[in-house]
Length: 264
Image (cartoon, rainbow, N blue to C red; front, side):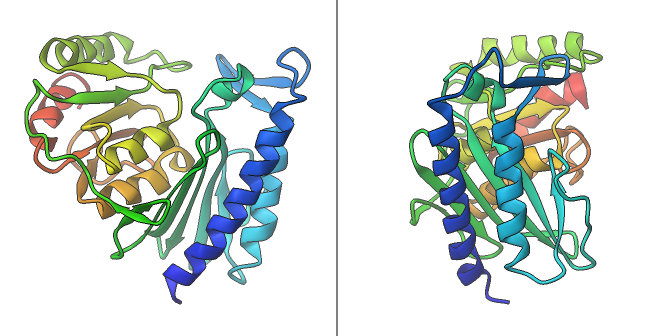
């Protein structure tokens, strides 16, 4: 399979779905069109309809492929190929008319990430990567930052919003990171946080209690852009282990030590 050609098709599907999301936002009602899945965990008809569009279109690209999708539109698992889909990453931002919110699509072959596409709907920025082929923003090659010091580092994170079991340790980590770096940002879309690490806007990112659809495409982008991705113990269980660190390779070790000290 030629992944670069497949990726071009995925980008068209994602862009079309992004236009649907953007159009629906004009008539969207935060009072009437929102369901609650859990504490501070929301879903809208736009999430569900977007996922169905993606599942239907992506399923036609690879016969027998399965899905790991946030809203459960399809629970079919493929023997070899599986699409990992977040139809609207940053739903809370979307509900409130805020950027960023994005679509994230990744493909696994034999449990290995081989393709990733993230589309930031408001800016029209399309990030993509295929395994071994580099990372791109709007078809221009991108790379992680070259900063190696705490003093110059700009960090991204996501605040715990439903599982607060490690909140105390999270706050300790955040305090040390605040004291040592040039700042922390919380954008509300993990997929975009990872893409911003990949293109050098952020030097590092960490977050807990994420799902595969939140991080799969963005993690591949970071690695293809020359960065490092791990769980809080330095291992590779960032996809299903509910914890992720991403950074450029020069800064990773120092940043990892802080996160691991409190949360590893």
